[in-house]
Length: 112
Image (cartoon, rainbow, N blue to C red; front, side):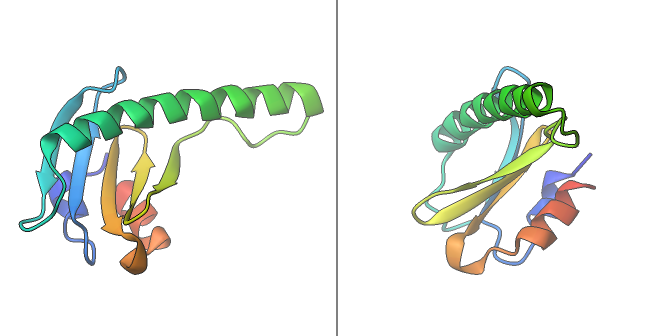
């Protein structure tokens, strides 16, 4: 399980968060001077749960329809916005500006 304090140690991280399976923001840290706020993170947490549910449905459907394996279970995803990217795995995520994000580093940190 990733620690949001360690996630904030990633190069240029502006936020880290943990959420419940219902999308409730459980824990968060926001870098000083960031435009992020708790309300935005709360909404992002609900988006994360919704995206994980949709991706899971698609992965299971694809496996069942094609017989191909390896798409399920979905453990994480990346959400690219206009200014920043959220990298999410299981129940937590980290936010980094688009021009500075290192996806491999973020997923490695989320793996714990």
